[in-house]
Image (tube, rainbow, N blue to C red):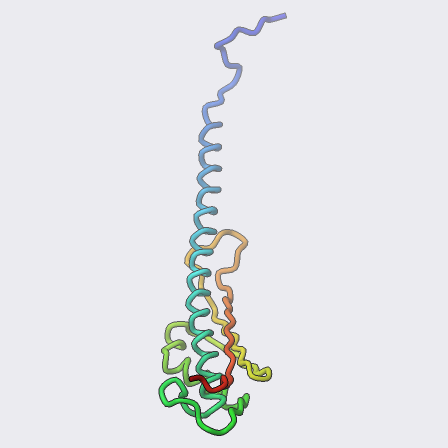
Length: 155
């Protein structure tokens, strides 16, 4: 029987470390893609959140009175929140804010529940990097709400 001598290799193992390095580099590249894509989705959602809140406030404001109460005050008659006026106010707000240019493919939905206006915005997002198996395009959404009402007279 032949004795094994330390220091002598029976076969060449020179390429094993390069396979390991390539594997780690691939995992690192996928991790970077996930972080970059997640950051892009988060930033778009933050922008849509701001737009949804502003649109809901405008929808509650103009949907109840037909005029801007923040600049002209509340009219004497009772506030009447209508879905059609709220929807038109939200559409006008998004148009005036340049939302359609900033978020191509933006869509919105408006619901009126009692004295509350609920706005849902969604827009497609093209991901900057894509990991294998992940979609190249996804949709990001945000919700906003506002309540309209008249408080009692204050001294």
